[in-house]
Every structure is written in C-alpha cells, then in structure tokens.
Image (tube, rainbow, N blue to C red; front, side, top):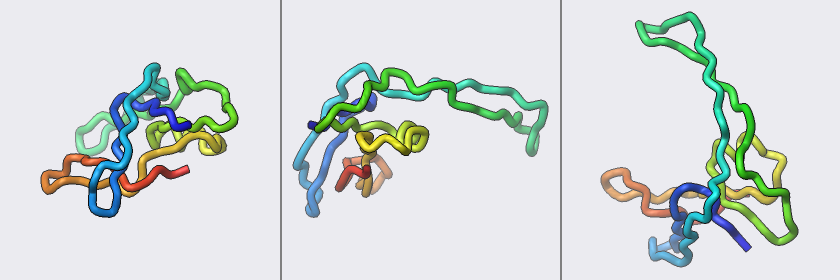
Length: 106
C-alpha cells in the first residue's frame, strides 16, 4: 500500500502521459521542522542565514507493506528509511507546471 503524505496529490503518468494512478494527500503531512539560524553576513547585499532541520514531523514507524510518498527533502533527511518514496521523472507542461511523474523513487 502506498500512502501520499505530501500536501498535494501525486499523479503517475504512463509513457503517453496518460494518468494511470492518482494518490490524494492524506494528512497529516510528513514534513521537516526547520530552525533558521541567522548569520551576521551578507552576499551582494543579501542577508545570508543557515537553516538546520530540527526534526521530521508526523513520521509513522515503518510497517511491513506500507510505503509513504514524501518530499525529496524528507527523503534526503531520512535516507535510511526504505519505506519513503519520492516522485521521479517529473513531467511538465510547456509553461513549466507539473503534470505528474512517471515513477516513484525509493
């Protein structure tokens, strides 16, 4: 079973860009709670700060046979988790809007 824990639906497209599966968002969203730490520096007049992750919110324990679609930031933070999937092979329209993806990456 695949459960979408992102804040938006995830659409899977076939090779002809037809929808083959759509995963609705199922709250609560799994997200990273960031802590912003201000640095006393600028670059070309722009304030520069450092951001660190504090914790991942709403993360369930792994369960056999259950996979969660999450953002790439969450997957990067928790790369050891085998049950977290991210959209891959993103398909965009002529204006750059996301239409869907061709696969999910583990």
